[in-house]
Image 1 (tube, protein in one colour):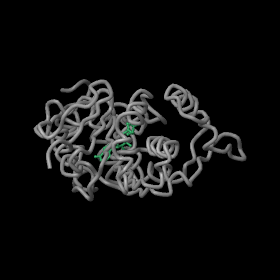
Image 2 (cartoon, rainbow, N blue to C red):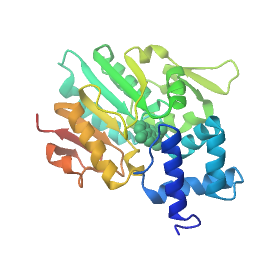
Image 3 (cartoon, protein in one colour):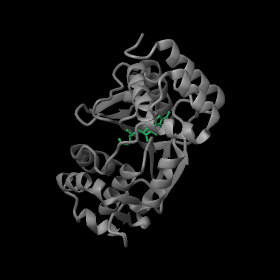
Image 4 (cartoon, rainbow, N blue to C red):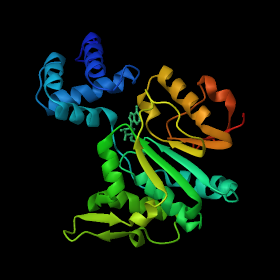
Length: 276
Ligand SMILES: C[S@@+](CC[C@H](N)C(=O)[O-])C[C@H]1O[C@@H](n2cnc3c(N)ncnc32)[C@H](O)[C@@H]1O
């Protein structure tokens, strides 16, 4: 037994999702996966994993709801302001003489991280050089990202982060209030060099080469084996001297591919690829 759910039931659930749809959660960290499933059972007043499996078999829409819950979409603009300060001061200037700056936001959720990057680059007069790919497993979060429309209540943290980051404008210079006053619409010109696409870090292959990859606050949900595999994917997707940025609680220290990287900032979890 694992808490209130038998681990065999969780494996059955993962197997059913994998069989019927394209998602493979076999290598997600089991304890946080279990917590998500317990929450789903409670929210939907479902009594057992078996009942959950039957519901998933009957409805793709219900499955999509479950996927949203399992994959945790929490995000904010300029999350960890000191990280964005380090990017501005120590990382992006290394690419400023490049013809293009190629950036991949892997697992970008609803796009706040992408808007943060575009604002940072615009304020450094480098946005025109940027070629940005922003990917996520979940099509719905990408729809929000493309729209640039966010609930106004989500902005308090983002505004505070932008202030701590010491951006050169006000964050409000980049958005307009919607007519209903409960949402903001970000300037979509910021996204002019951004391509959004679905990409599953578990199942999909490398698709291009980059100067900088951000994959923040997602590997924390993966088990060690999957973290290893994903860091290998990033190793293959970076140019030599390219950088990899992870979330504040993540590390590549234990991964096989760690030998391809040097540590640029322990606090901000930024690494540099040192091999060809
Ligand atoms: C907590 S959010 C992180 C968002 C942003 N990077 C940040 O740090 O604020 C995690 C994101 O990872 C995505 N995700 C989870 N599993 C994934 C997978 N196998 N492949 C790609 N994205 C995945 C989720 O859909 C979610 O949008």
